[in-house]
Image (cartoon, rainbow over all chains, first blue to last red; front, side, top):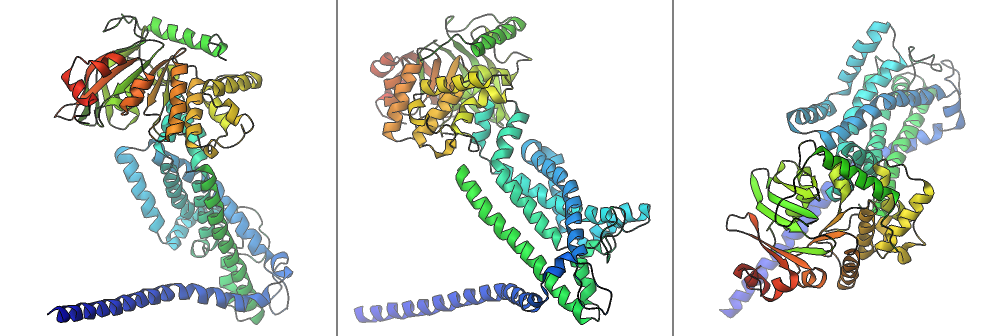
Length: 291
Length: 289
């Protein structure tokens, strides 16, 4: 009797061990499958892009078709301008909206606003491009840097709003109360205590939003449009890195393909550095503030 | 070590007089000499009532402890004194609190002004994490937009760090973040920050519950010293602490309905030796709570 009991128990343990191993392997496999595309994409872009990288890429304008050499400096400058325009619009709007939702927004209006912000996050970026096209390109009768920047800003706003809101909500109530109890007005408490305490989170949100829009292509197709020259002002078409990559990639020229790969590598590195940078900065930032 | 007559103090009393003149409040209540008179105060969180009809006079320039088991409304009561209760969404107060002649809940009374006359120290040390030790102490006058010269501010910071018995430990590192100090030091920094606004009353909500025994001892010592210059109300669920630091003790208790009420207020010695209410005696002797 005793013996049989021991035997049965051992068997069940063996079975449990087998199931345990099998499940662990399964999970590990799933993780590998999930991460594999990232590794493959990064590796493929590095392999193809690295030979096209030289100083000309970021300092020279495109060479005429068929001629060797040249670069796509106009695209990098164009992207920088577009990001600057988008940030100039989206940061004030997004951050202020986030502060409102976190600090003052109560009731139905705030809930609606929050919901709409989430909806805005989910809108396909090509649709955002159509909006900017209708609002800016049509009235001005020209593709333009302004319309491209506006399209990107619409994509940025919800990200900045929600991350600002979340960052400020993480600021402990005790800190707010400490300020209010000193006889400090609520608006000043928000401005001088809550926002500085949550600043790390806000900066993270802004950086993530910039990383996100720097790779956007669809909303620029019929707004910024692209150009082979330096930008000619906010109301003229302007080049952008993702657009140029797209145009070069569908062209029949070998040199252009190489440059597209190289530009893709630079763009990817930019986003990667931004993301890794954010993580290290915010980690130390939050630690030293004891939040 | 302390100077009671100084520009901020004068401005404060001038403001208090203005508020008092605007609201002709007649002193009444349990104790005409009380520094703070809590009159028929009831408080709610949404629909849940937390305290019911508490009337209590806080004697001036001494330490009054409020004791009672968890959930009896001790913290809520003192949060009604500096109008911090209403900061919680959905919270509301009935009744009134008088600070000297001033009715803190009179129509038109500005909670921001009320809070500038009443200091508060919280359960968990909460120095502003983005600010240095110096800036923490200077935060009250600065953020209230008072124009203080750099020299006066230096004096104010040093004086209040001394009052909070922290000066000697931090004088070399005033520029360091307040969050780098130990828990006990952080709490004394918070006391210095509250004192720097020159409050008439200092409310302390279980100020030692997050601290170790040595840090607690230092804070208690500090409380007894400060009582000479400022009226102190300390909420504590530590009866030994109440008997060590306070001259007066109020005992609160929640009924079966979960609503806190005042049982009695008396000299601390009286409360701990022969309380007049049997419920107080039951609590003191450890029969519940």
